[in-house]
Image (cartoon, rainbow, N blue to C red; front, side):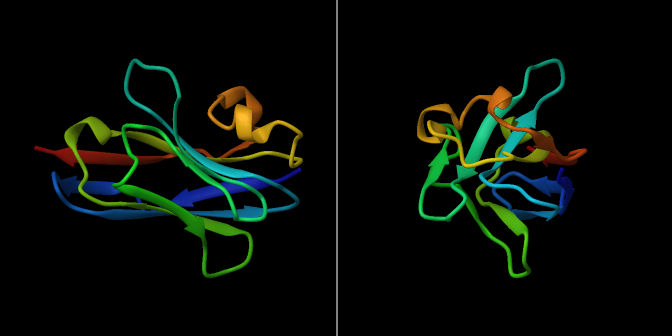
Length: 126
């Protein structure tokens, strides 16, 4: 069982940047970020395979956001640049319990993830 905790959210003007951090305790495998805007379902943002070799992004953030391993063990980041008002949401870090045989096909499904943080609010003003 793993526990995840996010930090780094806040209020930023359009065009600005934020870096979200996730720290995990316990065993986990693949890592990802999802977001949920008010009144909407969870939306996939970015993911990284357990070995760090493969990264995946949604079309809406590709080229602006980057997922990477953190500077401390069992952590990962979401660097968000050129933020837009439509990026406003609660951001969640997530992880799978095992590598999975078809992660490259399933990374964008919220149901693929076993562990979730409590979320951190990101608000982008226009």
